[in-house]
Length: 316
Image 1 (cartoon, rainbow, N blue to C red):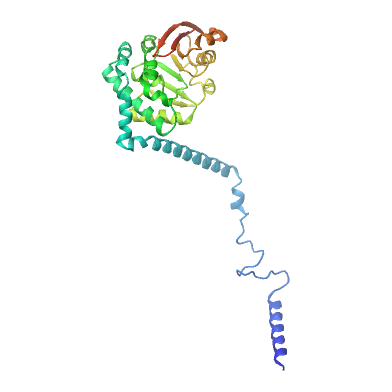
Image 2 (image 1 turned 45 degrees about the vertical axis):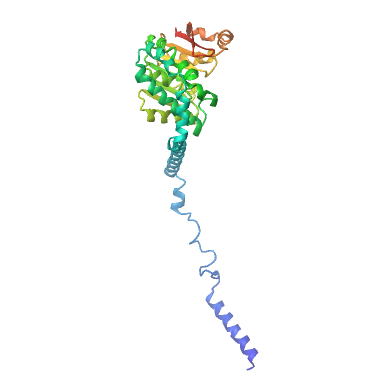
């Protein structure tokens, strides 16, 4: 037999052998040694797959989502706290700058307000200074709480304005207070430090400021202050807040009319409201008189060195 004929014969026998091994209906093995169409490596569609569509699996997925959201919130809070601590862990020059900034401010001007509120200035003013340090630290390293220009006048612009009417809040007899739109904690935190009220609820809708307030409570060990992250409009339907307070404070949050309309939900008859208002106070009182359905106007007093007045109201 000629060589080329022998090669054709061998190829023919190999092809025949292959046809004998592959029966009709069978698939030829692929390059990995398994047959095409083999389902062993495909996603399973048996009970294990179907189980993921049941109510139990849905509950597990919802639980997993909640856990992921909680982890995200913790990461946000931890990141904010870490940023807030940069100044504290930073150079001594940075702290020296804050110390010089606060040292130059008129802390002695707060003493009469603290005394009129029945508190000891030697105990209260060091706490107010620590509070001011934390506000400025957060203001510089995390997010704005007050204007940058107000850092150099935090005593006269913010602390004095908060504390000047403290004796009026004290004499009102209100023990449970709610503060609208607390932001940096003004006026509620200075008032609480000065001994006004037994408990405070600080309502703030912006999460970074809520994180600051909670961090502040831990740093200073303040008791009797609860930070509430939410919108006032939503809390008016929460039965744990309705008529649950003796007094309301609000500093530059909403216009006077809407503020008192909301406050009427949180304070029963005989309660009080103290609103820190700017130059538009008189116009706001005249433009929207709906507040008269719930409140009597008790008078005004100036606060701080600017044009701020504090308006007092009694719930009817």
